[in-house]
Length: 378
Image (cartoon, rainbow, N blue to C red; front, side, top):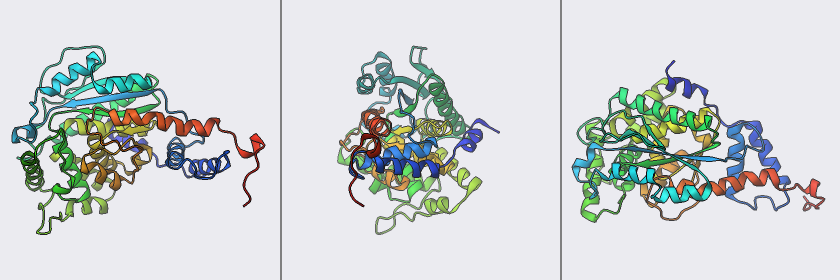
């Protein structure tokens, strides 16, 4: 078996006994039932993923920022020059990015992974070089990656997850860097959910109306060229044929379809993040998803192994419209909504203390019996 096949085979769904025990434990704690709202759901989710209640405390955390470039940049979908990708990698390594500041606040390690930057990077502390290619091909003209490149990027992400867990991480957080990667994200979300490009394509780094219109058309063209959709119908809705086919497929056919979609319109960092999520789930370690890049990558991971979703927590909902669509399709509820659209793992880092708090309640709060507190009458 390949590394990817071994990883997918190791992923288990949420344990029903642990889920039931966690829910019952929540109801015995010295608080009104359901009083902690979504935090209770998070604690139960992590118990099911870990197959034990209470679940292990998800700390320390490790952030992995996967960096890559995109051939679709040539279509004018962003005003930012391509070299910003490599420049931001240098900024991460120097500790000068927002992600570094947020990671320092929660004591998370930061690992930058070159999976497809269009330049040669010198070895540096905190940098993992797993370069599969010098960026992708232009997804609006044909497949962004070959099948071999896609699998290699997935397995690079799996390797990083294994390494960080071996080093002691008990929660993984997704990060990304790649100029033009919101265009690839929109195309992935369209292909996996059946939504039209206009509904899921956002302004990314803040493009103007003209560039946004061009970006939407590039996404539609990419879907048509790669045989993933017929584009929008007269009422603006996608026919959803690819997404419907993926949902109706099973086992090997579904995984093959997910790989084909990822290769056609994804990025090298999307594939690596999908592998990172799969790797975390296979090891029984929760992963906090960041924004739209992570959301679109999680769709690919779920296409390969549907049970992977049980091991994910949505850190936040970004300002990108496609992110809400992706999370709804995955059935994940974001913990915070701060209108972020930065990426880098920033939203996931901000959510980590909430995830820890949810689990700490399970370990440290007394039950009505242990505290001698009278429960309400049934």
